[in-house]
Image 1 (tube, rainbow, N blue to C red):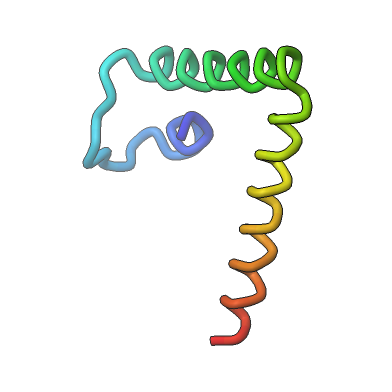
Image 2: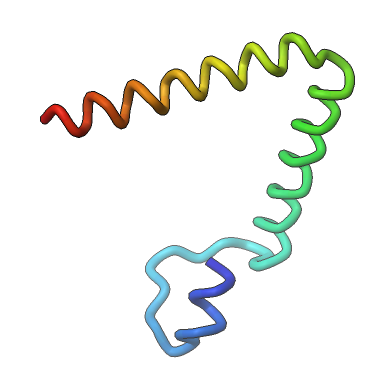
Length: 67
C-alpha cells in the first residue's frame, strides 16, 4: 500500500484509511509484537500453530493445482 502510494501518487484511491500510513503501520507493528510475544511465552503452541498454517498452505497449493 505504501509502495503503491509512493510509486503512483496520482492514482485514484477508492478506499481511504484514517491516519494513513500511520494507522496501518501501527497495526503491522502490533501484530508483529503479538507474534514475537506468543513465540517467547509459548513456543510449543506457537510452533503447532505455525505447522497448522504450513500444512494448510501446502494443501491449498496442492488442491489449487489439481483444479
